[in-house]
Each structure stands twice: as structure tokens, then as C-alpha cells.
Length: 377
Image 1 (tube, rainbow, N blue to C red):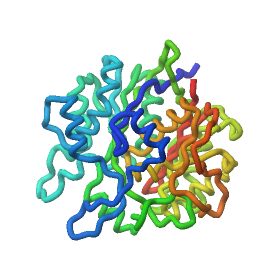
Image 2: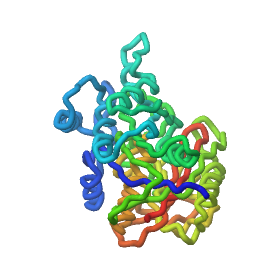
Image 3: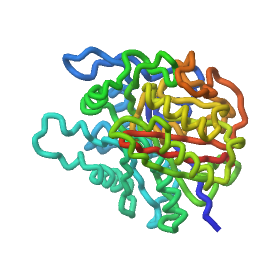
Image 4: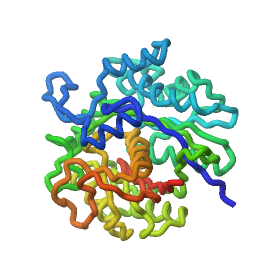
């Protein structure tokens, strides 16, 4: 019999707040972290979702004495600390770090690679601080990293490699990331509008998020979310462009739902990727329609948080679970008029709903796609 795996705790650090409750309350009020920011010298400001560094440092200083950390590392530590305090670390506890770029900002004006820029060193530094006893695992697969990190934890626990796992995901805004997306002409000139016909590109964001995953559900009436199924498929379509037929995402969703033994009719809510680029949103609409999921309520969180790269999948999974706990669907911000060739049931306003089964999807450069199915217990 297959071992059951649960998410029983989580936390996040974003421009909307340094814990889950502050984020959830901000979302209920329709607040967004996206605003105009000047990040690169000699370039005009652009829309992005940026954590206030002064507030971040204040919060960090309240919680930690040791200061030898980069800005991103401080975000990671703040996300993890509450979970570490509530759950013991043993010889059979995994530590999984998900990121797309890590400490890429350390490369600025450098001719020699700093050790901190290597993802393995970043993960080890965080693991050592909290006293993890196992070798850290790094998941870095473009923008599906956060969703894949949940899947890696689930599969390793089910295989008997570990008894539980702490998963943390994060990325920060840097000149490197901005320049990269600019080269693809993917950054929008205004606030992003996922699935809207007037969308013109992404807003970059930054955040960290953390979850605790275990084979034991919460007791005493506290929440648990069972990770029922997962899948990651690479359709190898293009270095940056998604498949026009949604092959990889379609296969990922199909596999995850098959493992979960959940039908199309049972899915109550889809937390989609929704970057607000022309081709990504169209690809997703095609894939969801191929799976006959076009009538399921769906949102993208990019209008609130921007695209947080390796953190997106984990952060958005957390917000999805909060939606299920509170029985409220959050609208897909800035959506007004359908801009995809296939229909989708885009959530337009806060609305009550009974949410038991959640489908979370993600897609990224290089043709990577991932999906997980969560069940509220």
C-alpha cells in the first residue's frame, strides 16, 4: 500500500507580508505587491513586486542575531524559522531548497565566482544554520521548481528515503533576471493581466515560501493537505517558448490526476501558472481544455505577486491551501476580457466555495511543465 504524504504546515515571506495571515488578508482586500520600481541604473522604472529591504532587515533583526547572510538568505531563514520551531529535525528529515537563480546577485562586478553563488553552497548554508543532518537537495528547474520540490519530497518519503521534509523555495529580483527577461521582450509595460486579451507580458516578483511535509497527518483538528499525485513532463518545445498544443502541461496534468485517482469532475479549483505572456496563457488554455477542465474555477496569482520564479509554485500552492481552508476563491487580478482561443473559468471576484481537490500547475523555459493534486483533509 502506497504511503500517504501530507503538507501540514507552511509559511511565506512576500511584498504583502512576512507570514501567511498577513498575505491572506492582503489578498482578500485585493492588494497587490506590484508597483513601479527603478532597479537598473539608466533604465526607466518598470512594474515589479519587490520586498522592502528596510522592512526585511527589521524583521530579520527581530528574529536572528547572526548577520552573515545575503538578502535572499535572510528571506529563506524568515520563511523557515516558524516551521523549524514547530517540527523537530531528525536523521531522517530531508531539506529541499527550490530556486531558479539563487544568489545570482553576488556575481555583479565580480571576475571570480563567489562560493555563495553555487546553489549547493546556498542550500548547505541554510541547512547548517538550522542543524539539518542530511545532505541538502536542490531543485532548480526554471519556473516549475517550486511545484517539483513538493513532488520530490512526496516521492522520497514514499520511497522510504526520509520520514519528513522541509521544503523552502525562493528567488529575488536582480539585474541579471531583469536583463534576461528583457532579452526575450517578455516584461510587460504595465501591471500584468493573466489570460486577458490586453496582456503584454510579465511582472517579475520576489518571495520565499516554506512547507513541512510528512507521512503523518495533523491531529487535534488542524489542517492537512494530502499530496495525492504529481508529474513533471518536458516537451522540449523550445528554449523559451511553450508548446503551442500544450503537450507537456497536458501530460503532466493527466499523469498527476491519474496517480491521484481524481476525475475532472472532482477538481474544485485550479491554481494556474498564468504569466500574462501571449504564448504561455494560450498554451495553458489549450492544455486545460484538452483535459476538459475549462469549467473549473481558475486563477493566477501573478497579478498580486508578480512572477517569483522558483518560489512561484510553492507560494501559490500555499495560497491555494489557504483558499481551501477559508472556503474562498481569490480572483485572478487584472483580468477583464478573455484573451485566449479556448474558454477558461477565470475567477473575477472573491467568492465562497467548498474546495477539497486542488490542481496546481506550473510551466517554464526549456519546455518544462509540472502538476500536483492536493486534497484537503
